[in-house]
Length: 294
Image 1 (tube, rainbow, N blue to C red):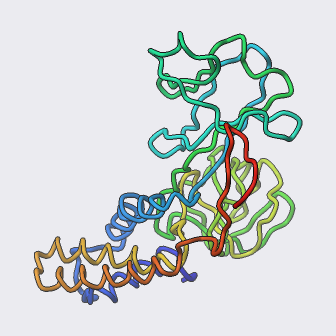
Image 2 (cartoon, rainbow, N blue to C red; image 1 turned 30 degrees about the vertical axis):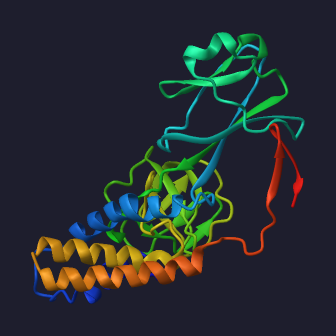
């Protein structure tokens, strides 16, 4: 059991809920699904509510003077964007490009509007030109939590080859898209690509991984054995699943105690994770340019 992997999370839920080892209402597989659900419906919104750049990612597109439509990344939470900027030569040309509602385009001098899952700049005469970089900043959807039996820890690395000390899952086949996840907090995705070949317990990757070390985990694309949240939030995650267990068992007293404990854990967690930067100076903006600090 690696610290903070799904085996660890399952053990914490069972301990907090005092689930007997003989019970079969909450299997490990079911607890993983509950952990994943609570992660996405409670913990991620909790962290996003601080508007403190948790789960922030950026997608860049090159301008060519004619393209005005750019796709919102498929892994954006709720297909939601934080902001849009245009860079030129490594410096900001427009920070936080203004959004224009479609019905107001006739009055707009420059901006963008949303159409389905795309961003469209208007007017077309002001499309990002060659040398410009369009940068979409968005909130990245966290990977799905899975049991450790569905992934493998890396036991050795040699160029394109990574080894596992145990038999690979049947879902690992040539051509399968995978990702390598760091064993250390914040459990970032270190590499994504495809399996080029499999020989025994050795996976040959389609490109050389960088920043990967023994003990990191190989998972199917979009999956992980670690909750992608600060480790200080792990008790909140586990306790929220305990609440779900008490609800399922119709244990009213247990539910009240679990809820009270959750409130206490949440309060102490707030003190730990917010604000992310102490004594941060306030930023001053003029128009769409960052000018200075208070």
